[in-house]
Amino acid sequence: MLAILGFVGTLALITGLIHFYLWKRLVKDTTGPGRWRRVGTVVALLLAVLVPATMAGTQIAGAFWLAWPGYLWLAVMFYLLIVLVVLEVPMAVARLVLRRRSAAAEATTAAPEPALVGAAGGVDPPAAEAVDHPDHDESRRLLLARGAAIFAGLTAAGITGYGVRTALGPPQLDRVRIPLAKLPRSMDGLRIATVSDIHLGPLRGRVHTERIVAMINRLDADLVAVVGDLVDGSVAELGEAAEPLRDLRSRYGSFFVTGNHEYYSGVEEWVAEVDRLGLRVLQNERQEIRARGGVLDLAGINDVTADGTGVAGPADFTAALGGRDVDRPVVLLAHQPIAVHEAAKFGVDLQLSGHTHGGQLAPFNLAVKLQQPVVSGLGEVDGTKVYVTNGAGFWGPPVRVGAPPQVTLVELRAP
Image (cartoon, helix red, strand yellow):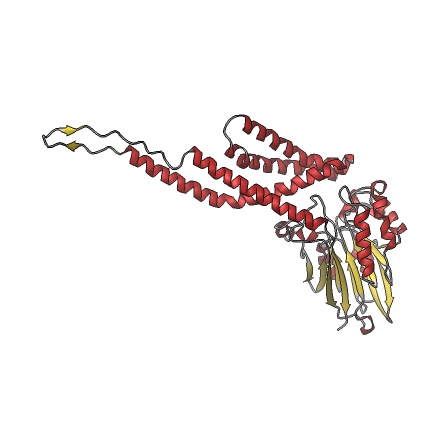
């Protein structure tokens, strides 16, 4: 609870600053003093409150009706900010050009007219001065600001609309072949259906789970790995939505490890519920997979952010990987890719992870890369291969841009 409140407080501060910037560019710069500026200011204040209210309301108070307007606005806000920041440079150049033209026009207007000497030696009176309106006036500044605001609004709305369609559509199926040096020849082609970040919650329910289960079952996989962040809510709220997981089919079993969101949602209850649904929960432990005359170790750790005791205990790599036969290949299920740094010390051949959502909202993937060694797809860290799936759901905004929802069929290949 304290972690959620701290997150909401931080988010409120950040979104407050963002909304002040948006108000400046979209309201103050595009309107004069008066009714419309007052209306725009009130709307900006309401939207600034909506984002933290949605976070607190959906996570703490169960006010799921806030989810759609609040999370959609969060996505629009994100892209408005990006577009307006990108426009700052050309806007600054345009304002500078207009200012220089204005200064030049004012200098020309202020220059005295030369006196004209008539034939009789008299001095003709100066002709009436024509008043030249400067180019850089209020109407031009207003036109420039409104043009930028309209462009930013249309761009943000278009990107968000595309992202909603992508996020709510069916996950794409990715197939990846990963060679493991220790894999016995008899186990060549062993297939692991991998999914993460299903994120059942205020915007995703039972139909979402049914679609994912049906997709996995069509793959006829040897193993199923659900790599954390299944839910954003309690068993009482989302148990019915998770129920279709009992229908998962595979030759050698379905397995689950906790993600960070399980620890916000009652991890003890969810571990028991997932186990009841027929998935083996790997809590800092490993399971021998005997198939096709060979043996593979499948290990799983609690999420690296876990901080508690018992079921809620932190990741324990020694418990999961210590004392094993090092001649066997080992595949580790770990929600966050960053776990690979510790996993490599134990000679893990392959780590399967999620957590990143592939960035979910490009260009946010660039920020994710600052924290996680691999954002999406296959990589290698300290000699250990790590595959990161985009996840099948979304968190927060029902929007995915540049990172479509995904279910992955990992095929292990012998040398």
